Amino acid sequence: MLTPEDSKLVRQTFASVSEESDCLVRDFFCALIDLDPSLASVFTSQSANYDTFKIRLLEFLRLSVDAVQDETLFACSLPLLTRLYLALGVRGEHYVTFGSALMCSLEKRLGSAFSGDVQAAWTTVYLLLAEIARDEPDPHLFADGSHN
Image 1 (cartoon, rainbow, N blue to C red):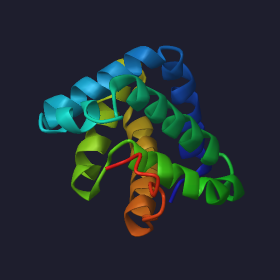
Image 2: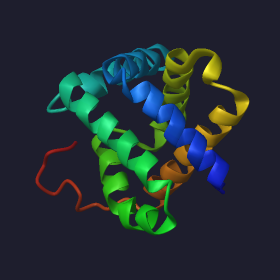
Image 3: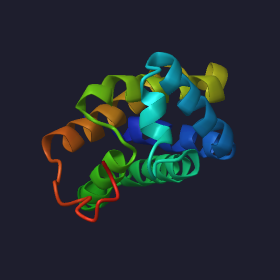
C-alpha cells in the first residue's frame, strides 16, 4: 500500500528528474534494451518509434505521479494509466524488465538521492500500476489497429 510518505517521495523525485526528461527517457530506453535486447524491435517497429515512446512514457509517469496524490484521482486515472501502459508496448512478460529499467533510470538520474525509501516508494507505485494493467486489460483499447 502506498503511504503518504511514499507519495511525497515519488512526487519530489519525479519533479527532480522531470527537469531532464530527455535524459530520463534515454536512460530508461538504454536500460530496457540492456536488460532485454529483444525489446529493441518492439519499441522501434510499426508506430512505436522512439519519439512516440518518449511521449507515452513521460505521460504515463506524469499521470502516475499526479494520481498517487489522491485516491479518488488515482481511481479515476486507472483506465488512462492502463491504456498508456499498454500503449508503451508492455506485455505480461515485460513487466519485470520494464520495472527494472525504470528503477535503473531513476537511480542514474537521482544519484545519491535514490535512497532505499525512494526506491521502495517507486517500486510500490510501479507494482500497483502493473498489477492493475495485468488484471484489467481492455481488449478494445486498440480497436483502431494502432497497437499490435
